[in-house]
Amino acid sequence: MRSDDPAVAHVQKLVDGFWPIHVLAALAELEVPEVMADGPAAAGELAQRLGLNEFQLFRLLRAGSALGVCEDLGDGRFALTDAGAFLRADAEGSLRGDVLFYSGMSKRGFADIPEIVRTGRAGHSVTLGPEGFDLLGEDPDHLDAMHRTMVGSSRDVAADLCRIYDFNAHQTVVDAGGGYGGLLAAVLRSYPHLTGSVFDLPSVEPGALAYLEGQGLNGRAGFVPGSFFDGPPPPADCYLLKYIIHDWDDEHAREILASCRRGVGDGVILLIDRLLPDRFADLPDHRRFARADLTMMGYGGQERSEREMFALLDSAGLRPVRIVGQAWALSVVEVRAALRAG
Image (tube, rainbow, N blue to C red; front, side, top):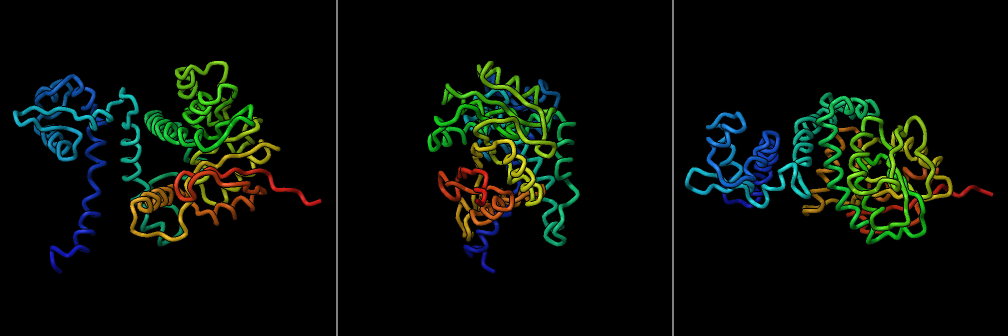
């Protein structure tokens, strides 16, 4: 086997991809970027301020320099790069939550893939189903990291959503399973006539209310505690479900959709999700979708193709009206209750 064989180089590149997330997570967890924001500093100075081991921090900073989030200045000091600044918790558009959340995923759900593929059952690293979300509420730090990650995701998704979908026909919006309400906040800012609420578990309420208040939405946005599995979201003429259905297997997803069908009545449900291609190839976008699907495999959920999504909707008494957006990028599936015979 030749070392210059392109196939060997390809596999080696894939093998080498395991470690950067753990370097970023270590820097973020230790709050190194926050201290480095004051300017270039030697590892010893940073270690003293943070209560860390100097030599091991030096090694971590070298690794960060190799990844472009730090810069080795060559005189014993290290500086934070523009990219590294996004690891700070206080940075506008911070990616710290993403780093910590996906680092945790790589240690848990992905480790169970062989067992899941052998048995068809979820592994032991995570607790799945409704109980898993209840347990998440007992870990405030992980809960906050996850929802801050979702706020960042929602900010990007909302910009596309408000560009491709017209909310002028609606008056009230519910961000169902919306976490802190990042998507709701963005939609309400783009459409000042709308009012809305976040529907999510009680453990999310303090963070959601604080976020919505910080967005200047007092009087226009509220929070309704509850679970899809205990009853429908509050009445509205438009439900938003962003990256909700992919969290669940078909049985639970069908129950969620049926609950939303009862709550929304004659209104619409917008399923904001990825729709996978029917056939995968060695393409950057397809790799992202494959990663997303394997992530959800470890957590008992799945990404779905258009065909799979439509079959699920039909089984829940719903019908797709149209798809707005690209079929295998950001897709908005507009859904209504199925037409009754007669």
